Length: 150
Image 1: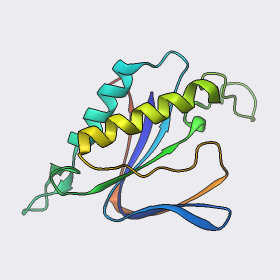
Image 2: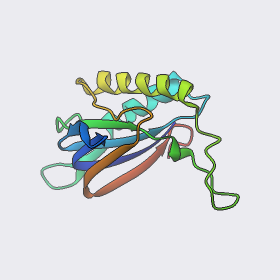
Image 3: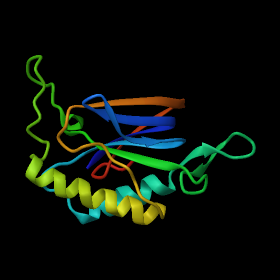
Image 4: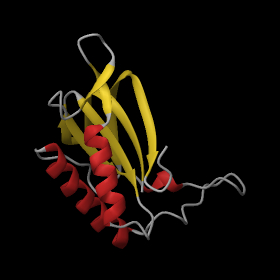
C-alpha cells in the first residue's frame, strides 16, 4: 500500500461538477493498493497516518497529530500511485490492484482510518473521474509505503 499525504487547510472532491466530499484542516490521503496488500498493510498505514505528527504545537514545531488537533482526513483511492515509467513514455499500472481487489481494500482502509481517528472519514468516489482541490498547508507532503517504511 502506498499513500501520498498532504497537510491541508481544506480539500474537496467533486464529481460531475458537484462536491461529493469536503474537509477543513487535516490530511488529504491519496491511497493506492497492490493485489497482495492485506489487513497488516491497512492497519499499519491507518495507525501511522492518524498518529503522524505533522501539525504545529504552541512553538510551531510539527509535534501534533491530526487526531490531537481534531483535524479531518479525506481519503481518495488513486491507482496511479503504482505507475511504472521504466519503459517508454506511457506509464504502466500493472502493479496496481484491479478495481475488484482495490475497492474492498480501500473501503476497509477507510473503516480502519475512521476507527483510529474516532470519527467518519469522507472519501472520493471510487472509480469516478474526480476533481480534487486542496490548499496545501506548509506545504507538507509525504509519500509512505507500507512495504518500505522509512
